[in-house]
Length: 160
Length: 160
DNA sequence: GGAGATTAATTAATATTTTAACAGTTTACC
DNA sequence: GGTAAACTGTTAAAATATTAATTAATCTCC
Image (cartoon, rainbow over all chains, first blue to last red; front, side, top):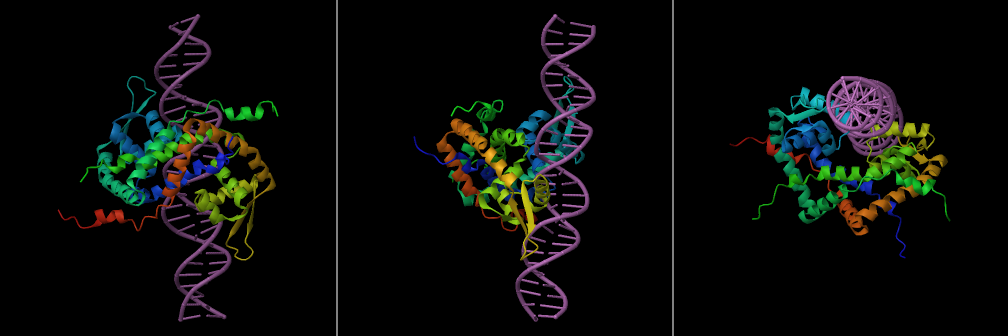
C-alpha cells in the first residue's frame, strides 16, 4: 500500500524529446552540411542496410507517415539519391532503393556520424549508452494501446 | 585493444524516436479527443505548473523553436486556452499564462494522462521506467557540440 | 466473373518544423 | 546623448507532420 507519486510527473515523452534534441544537436550540422534532412538520412541508411524496400516498410522503420513519405521520396529521387519503381506483381506497392550516388553520399557521411557518436560516448560513457539503448529497445515494443481504453475510466459508471 | 563494433550502429536517435512514438501512441488519442496537439499539451502543462512564463522560456522547456511557437500561441489564445501580454518593463518580451478555461481542460485531462502512464508502467515495470528516466535526464545534459569539429576531418588537407 | 470490402499510396488542408532574414527594443560603450 | 551591438519575437519560404478523404489495385466470397 505504498503511496507512489503520480507517474505523469515522470514526463517520459518530454524526456525522450529533449534527449533526442540533445543528441541531434551533434548530428544535425553534419547532415545539413551535406544538404540532407534527418528524414532523408534515416531513409538512406535504411536502404543502404537492407537493400530495396516497400514504401510502407520504409514508413514504419523510419517513423514517417505515408503522406509525408510520398513527398520525401519524390524529392529524394529528383535529387538522384534513390530509385522508385512499382512492384510488377502488385502494382499498388512502391519499391524504393538507394542509387549509386546515394550510396556514395552515405559512405562519405558514415565516418562523420561515427565521430559524433564517439563525442557523445566520451561524455556519456559506453556502459550507460548500451544500457540506454537496451531500455529503449524494450520500450519500443510496447503493445499498441487497445481501443482507447483510457475512456472506460471516464465513460463507465462511477462506482464510488 | 578491444575491437568495439561501430557506435553508429547503435542508432541512438532512431531508438529515441521510436520509443517516443510507442509511448505517444498511448497519449495521442487522449489529447486529440480534447482537440489538443502534442505541443499545445506540453505548453498547457508547463504554464499550469510554473505560472506565467516568457515565450522564450516556453520555447526552451517545450522544445519548440520560436518561429513555431509564435503561431501556436496565437492559435491557443484564439482558442481561449491562454493569455498573451507584453512585459511592461521590456516590451520585447511576451508573457504567456494559462486561462481559466485552459486550466479546467488541464484538470480534466490529467487523470487520463495518469491512466496512460499506469498502462505503460504495468507493461514496462516501475524499475526500468525510473532507470530510463534517469538515463534520459543525464543525456539531456550533453554539452552543446563545439563549433562543428567534425569537419576538421574533412576540410583539412588530404595528405594521401 | 463481378459487387463490395480491403489494401497501398496519394492528394488535400491545416499545423508544425526548420533555416534565414527582419523589425522593434534594449543595452553597452564611447 | 547617440550609435552600434545584442536581444526577443515575428515573418517568409520550403519541408515535414497530421488527419481525413480519395484513387487505384487487389482480394473475398458468392
